[in-house]
Image (tube, rainbow, N blue to C red; front, side, top):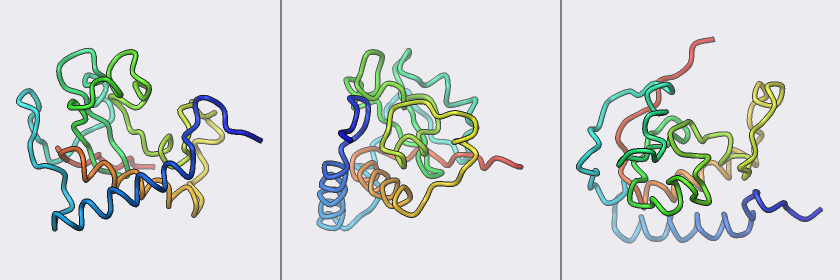
Length: 144
C-alpha cells in the first residue's frame, strides 16, 4: 500500500536523520545553532496548553518532540499557517513524528505506546530538529 499524501516517506526520513547526525557530529554539538528567536524566551518547562499560543499565528512557532520544545520559527514556510507541517506547530508533535503521519489519531490509538520502529523514527526526527532549531525548554510530563 502506497503512503498517502499526508504521510512522511520512510526512506526520506531516514536520509534526513542520517544527514542531521553527520552534520551535528561535524560541528561537535547536538543543540542546533544556539540562536533563539528574539520574540521567544526559553523556559525550563512548558505545558502543552502553553504551546498552543505558538502555533504560527504570531511571530514565534514552537513544537515539542520527545519531551523537548523547539523554536521552529525560522522555518515559517513549513510550520506556519498554510505550511506543509502546520499541524505540528503549537503542540506536542511526538506521535505525529513517530508515526510518520500528519493525520490525527483516534483516542484509542493515542493510548497505545509507540512501537520500536516508531520510536526510531521519532529519534531520527528529534536528531534532525536538534541540528536545525534551538531548544527552548522541556515539555512537562503528563501525570496519569
